[in-house]
Amino acid sequence: MTDHRLFSMPFAKVYPLYVQKAERKGRTSDEVDHLIFWLTGYDRSGLERHLAEESDLRTFFEQAPAFNPDSSLITGVVCGVRVEEVEDPLMRKIRYLDKLVDELARGKALERIVRKAPEGS
Image (cartoon, rainbow, N blue to C red):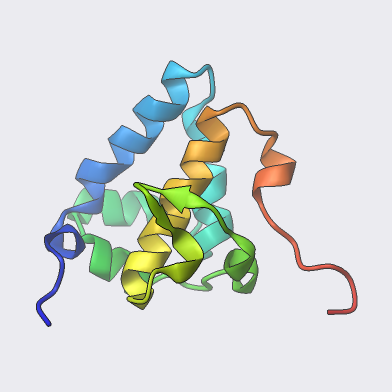
């Protein structure tokens, strides 16, 4: 099976689209960044480095310092596909971020977007 062409797209081309989507709905780029940091474990300098280097999506997600284990709690539909049913691990990570930004743009509170496993699980 060949790689999806999305995997080689520079993250620096996708990131502004996430920000635009959020800002059109009255949200901020800082909120988008917060979601990226929560999901991937990147900090501001790590995010800025990948944007400056124009790392592709594969590299961006593969080099994520600490992909959040609670990301598996992200469920729902993005682009007509249930994110929890996406088989390719890289595509699932991309769809997780898509879903988080969608929820932000829909007005959901940041505290509710970032999932947390119940205590003791």
